[in-house]
Amino acid sequence: MSETVLLVGGGGREHAIARAVAPDCELYACASNRNPGIADLAEGMRTVDETDADAIVDVATEVGATLAVVGPESALAAGVADALNDAGVYTFGPTAEAARIETDKAYQRRFMREAGIPGCPEFETFDDVAAACEYVDAYDGDLAVKPAGLTGGKGVRVTGDQVTKAEAKAYLRESDYDRVVLEERLVGEEFTVQAFVANGDVRTTPAVQDHKRAYEGDEGPNTGGMGSYSDADRTLPFMDDADYEDAVAVLEATVDALDDYTGVLYGQFMLTAEGVRVVEFNARFGDPEAMNTLPVMETPFLDVLTAARDGDPLPDLEFSPRATVCKYAVPAGYPTDPEAGARIEVDEGSVERAAAENGTEAGEALLFYASVDARADGLYTTTSRSFAVVGVDGTIADAEAIADAALAAGGNGLRVREDIGKPELVQRRIDHVERLR
Ligand code: AMP
Ligand code: GLY
Image (cartoon, rainbow, N blue to C red; front, side):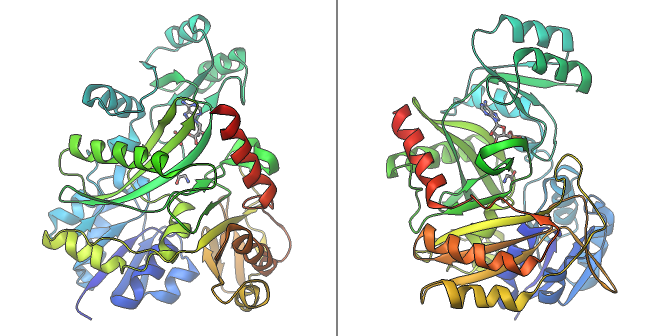
């Protein structure tokens, strides 16, 4: 094995990245937390603040990294990819400037408007709370209120859905963000398409639907994502090939207009009555979506990384024709009042049995650790999502049955959204889009 890969980040997404690259390289990792799943796969795992670019460069130099992959947006925003590249370590992840497509939502929308990227909603940006509140009053229709900076997916408020206009204004006044974007509320079904991007090449992966709301039936506050599913082909049951192609066209137009983007470009789309619109872009894999996509990717991730670095065309990607369902187990009270420091049990053997006992021949059950605190006497919760299970099988229903059974590995004290990937919820999505069209 000639490549030494340094992975930055310690969540479920990074555990999925580690699992995808570890068989083909010597893997090292650094993250703020010691993720036991990544630690098992890596030759070494160092506890380092993910935004401390100098410390990460030191680790890369020490282990002789020939490639690096940056998982979290916080590290990209802190210039970790810039620093690693400057130190001569080719990094799959955008520079801090290029990552503004995610980290600055005002820039993102202006970029879309100026570059003529299809699917941009009507929007205005504000740095003055009073002016923003006047716009809310004057706007004919519902709006999304979006802080321009990073909020871990928890900063957006949508009128007519989560809040009234009066509550949206109160939110603007209380939170006192420096800059906000106010934009037209998009109504429809959300889906994610993630693409590998380097040297102008764009290779897209199957669509995934995440579930941002904390509670069953899409109730409650927004979270980092409670779980997600993908189908055995590249579309989802509520969309068709043309919708997927529209999303790909948006990603390709974006990469064309961005100068020399490297890394994952993640498009969050809304399938509306008027077609595919853009909710946002992210500059990295989604979490949980990486846990849907990477386990069914048959092309080695390392081949994408080396092609990107060596200036070769990116390989065409092959995916196993199987559906996936991912469910996160989160601390009690998450996201508003999460109970950190609770002891949890994770029975890895019972995850493996979940596939054998509930799936077909093609079935697989996977466990991805996220934000757990591994102490000498066991695992403890933090304030973030604890671990995820992923069922993989021929249909969404079979994959869901596996994920459901695998959750038994988690014992008591954690919360999950049971409804994700269940036939009733998937059918509601289909009915919703049928009504809109
Ligand atoms: P973001 O932080 O941009 O990922 O937004 C979080 C969530 O807010 C999205 O996944 C959507 O559910 C919702 N959202 C964001 N923008 C809009 C919009 N223009 N219309 C409706 N919902 C939105
Ligand atoms: N799943 C949403 C995100 O990663 O931002």
